[in-house]
Length: 416
RNA sequence: GCGAUUGUAGCUCAGUUGGUUAGAGCGCCGGUUUGUGGUACCGGAGGUCGCGGGUUCGAACCCCGUCAAUCGCCCCA
Image (tube, rainbow, N blue to C red):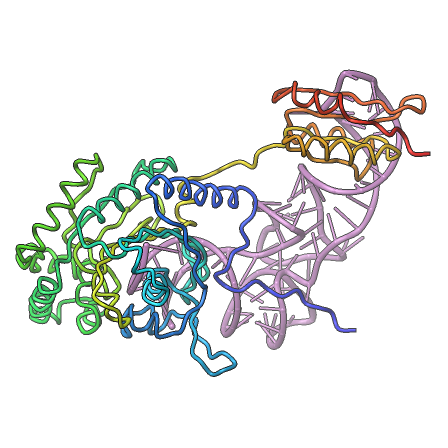
């Protein structure tokens, strides 16, 4: 008989367990709490969509669409794609589900996303994000509200140390287009001196040269045309209102005129919360305004702004979140009183007291095992002269509640 | 897609210039001791040395390939 091989996990996926899982849950729970404070409505979105939802909104030539999507044909020969981000799907729902009637609509969600990338620190092929969007609001207050919310989330997670908000404007469509033309002309003139990557970027995504880490590029980037010289009056005023709002809310920010976004649909405000504590994956939360997106999905022009943050990255910054010890461990030291162990543990749990039942392995070692887990209380069940005997040791926690449950519990006694 | 580093027990790791039957601690299982108790001791299970090929009388160790993980590039949260 052939040996059955255990299937290996899929590259870039993770089985999150123990302290990591606690940190993950802590991020999601904190997000849920903050999102309610800012009155964002919870939505649940499908994990897959028609491929065109992403290819149209993100742009065919972006790396995400051209080489990082998990796309497949279903049994009806339709091209579907596992979502690589939240925004496109939410925009689609806004158009197809009549959400326009709720505009301006504040929504929040979280869940898994999929990108075919090389896994490394804080980056996976199935990863998880929290996401917040305001759709149908063209005023700078919407940008401000989203940023203040993100700032509060980071504070409440206790990770604001070393995290800074980097802020920029890409201008409106006119500003952005004329800036882009000037950038291309400038970099074209020094093309031969640029890194290979940046020569490539010049064709596909010239704004990205500004982000380059290559020292050969940095000298030229310093003298590159600035967005500020191309802003229309409207764009300049819009950005001014965003920064005024942040100042009014007491949120610190840093202007980063070289900060750009990777996806095509962004306009005006672009931002990242960045840390120096996660190696190369410094961006912990990022987003911006995407006023052009709805039209690319066939909808009416609709202003919108949003952000997303990687749960794994936030969880790494949060660090160790211990798994809480049981409030009480019920130790069955004699198997003939197992039923009482089951009964009293159930009664404790029904009373809202977290309890573990220890009734396997060597009976004589069970108590020591319980002690090692450091519960707030231990209830040891044994048999003394044919009668059940229970001893309670309390080192913390709610003594009154536990003794109340024990007092009203109807003991069966040892099995015959 | 590219580069670097690392793969030995469930976990953390030893393993000499290539040389008998690959070890330790923790964890797990059983036993002895103790008996309001986190003790100590004894024993046991568990390893195709990531996988495949090569060199050699002989490979965990050397060479090639492959897979995976980690860190970085690209890209992105």
